[in-house]
Length: 171
Image (cartoon, rainbow, N blue to C red; front, side):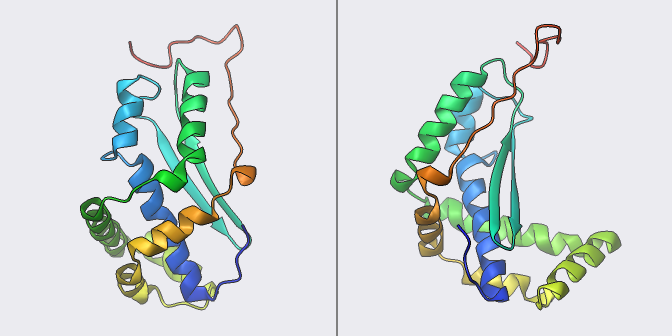
């Protein structure tokens, strides 16, 4: 959904989406382990976020021998998000981890320039990142989940053609 947020709230919203996707699909999440165990995904499974003015996307990417099973599983997960329970310890750990990841950016001049420019164009100071992360609560995550509506969810499954070598995953 398109939200009218001030720039600081937009930053908080973006960080909250990062936390939610890590809670759901991060390498330490239960869902991730279940997808690996069922062999629906391998360790190349990734989730990316696009957060632009009026456009918010969560995009999953996976190599799989079971595309339709993965599709059904992801559909089940997203369609039942209102039942998702946030683990407080995992939430706190993820906040610290993601804060550390953003702070780590200061070790790379190109990344500093990109983030500085991005937030400057938003009218924000990149040095408030830690402050904004600390403001995020579990209630923010639950509020974000309420914004995800079934009618706004879509899936695209790309299948290989017959000539494609299907050795995309290890057995």
